[in-house]
Length: 255
Image (cartoon, rainbow, N blue to C red):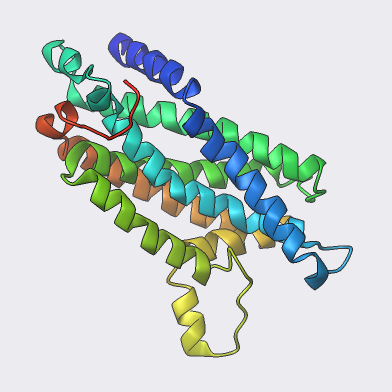
């Protein structure tokens, strides 16, 4: 446990000094919410604005994109040429994975809180009684996405190619969930396609919780993410490869 705590503190310090990490999880969602909210300001009324719509749908999308951030977290020791020290030290692979995972979850959750406070206070999103449930949902999604990212970072070759390909299904899932433009349909077949996106369920549960006061779907969705995150975490530990942890060269990466 002391080794895990030491690794966690080490990773927290590294993540907290990473401008890309903080910018991608705070500045990026805020800019996207403001930009898309402004462009769609004429499509909504005064009681429900475009800023409020994108405040809800953009956060889950940005959390899903954190798969890439977590994958980089799994590779940064290789890029910084410090990974060999860990493998020569008596550190279990499971604790290396867990330390990375927990540090990413903690800092990303803090970033989520910052963005939630921004949309609540400045964009008037009515997060009165549902602030904590929505935060827990985003944390559960963060857990799941970070676990998937670490599978890529620790256990897969051709990391750069894989993480670029990942952008395609994530953006497709976001489009189906209405992250860039609300999609409404009366077609049962198209509705089935929309519901194939996990982000559709996240967005729907957040809308129901915030505007209808119904949290049952939110809790079920959170539980699915937690169970999936546990499975992916076990896979990340099982698929940990020494050669992938040691070797890594990224053009332009500052060591």
